[in-house]
Length: 447
Image (cartoon, rainbow, N blue to C red; front, side, top):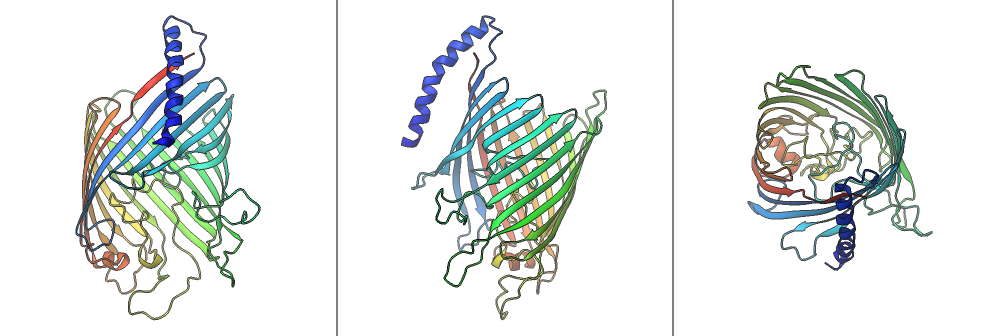
């Protein structure tokens, strides 16, 4: 609580100034070009798991998690600043949860050319490899510099980030146990809107990873291995010029990874994804899609009963980098938010379809089906099939700043699922949650 006191005092000091400025604006002072907004996000989610998420001797678990964010946003011509402190934790925890900065950046923009410096989120295309990951408590953020240009249908972004554990001369070349999985990262993204219905993007990411090797004296190797990813994203959207209540949307993406892993193993991995959505009328939507991520046939740690280790000559496991994983790979988060047993990564493929019913943008019902499988043959497994997952979700928005969501997910696993997850309770898994998200705006003034 002591950590929050300076922020609370600062907000209290700013509010009288903001209220005074708002009064002047209401009397027609159109020369005010500075805008200050104070808002918040309060998310509370109760979860129930039965045979899901973790391999324990317990048959079920239930808990409540929460996240609070305060958004301080300031904007004037050529300058924009945003600071977002956040706290997250579990109800009843003894360690007080986690308090950190989600965002703290400044941006200047002149005739389409811009520069943004500080802690910021990076969200691109469908967020499959670079996204907010807002489902998680802390989300994904980067301490980086982003420069670019946006105009006439073109968008060009260049991002650079460099991380160190401590600001000192000793050990400064080794980055271990930091906030980011990388030591340095550079990204180039280009997007163009071809026509009214077409758009496409190109993405290149270079990532420097601290070596995982240990020398003869037990010290970490002071070496950085670099891996690259290149890919493209394409989107088609058709919506009649006259309001007909229906539209078609199709996405496709392909990414290829190469370079070296942290173990100095050559990387040769790829991913392809296609997704289609259609709205039949103002209330009903349909979606269907498929994705395929390459994987490895060999275990880093072999199954029980095997003798010795089998060394990989190449790493074929696709790395999702910093994407929003929960929204793509099943609501139970069995895959890519958790590791397979022993570091094994047999890849993942998913064929899915579903439907959504929406009423007046206040109430919606969703049903999704996933057929999940590995992309390589698993040693001694009878099939690549991992299981079938059914997701049901209902959302209600009584006002624009309140969202209430209830969800239930059931998965019927296979023998292969038990093998790659090392859990006998994976045949039938249940997961349910109830969440309430409040996003009020307290103050928005011009001065």
